[in-house]
Image (cartoon, rainbow, N blue to C red; front, side):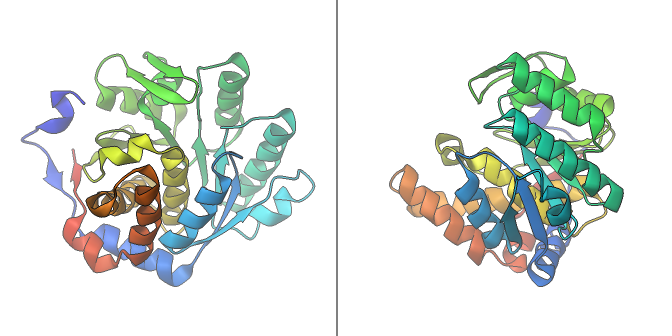
Length: 279
């Protein structure tokens, strides 16, 4: 990330009691998070949702998604392994979630890689009221129209300042944007939160981006301020990644430890070790 995210005299740390309180609310409320998601990472997303303290359901049949989302606290739409039928299910579930005031988290996996994927992301953004758009730098750059690149589903980065890219995307889409990277950037177009928790090992394991969306949805389900909730979720997930990396000897020991560390994370842990700056 460039210096604009690394050093600013105007930055201040968010009180750790705020993310801690949100984690406690997830654990006590155990919200249901409905996923219409990526078949590659679906099991990891279900289990990380449980580790965060919420309850997952993975239902995508068009015949049942409206009924399922009605019982949920949040809906995740992940376009990682798209089909026409899945897109239709996303639209049905998303419209019902909007009717009921249930927040929708969109993960535009690999947007920009193909015309179908890019058109689908824009269709969902244009048709639905998206609460949080969670993507990597390349994906957010593509949707912001400021320059971004992807290869397959991996980020190729953004052209220019990532903070301004995220802000522009939030303003143009009307959503909270959570852009993951070495330093996560969360913005509603006005406020900016920089989340400095995490570990490079998280980028070397398939599915961590999808899992981050699941954790974000769990936090958003218990909050009114979706920007603060998204930042808190990424701090919790990043802190679990930091702790998992300490004893890991490779990608799969890290993967196992990541689940264990998030499941064992306490509100006091997050209060003491979340590193969230607000600009």
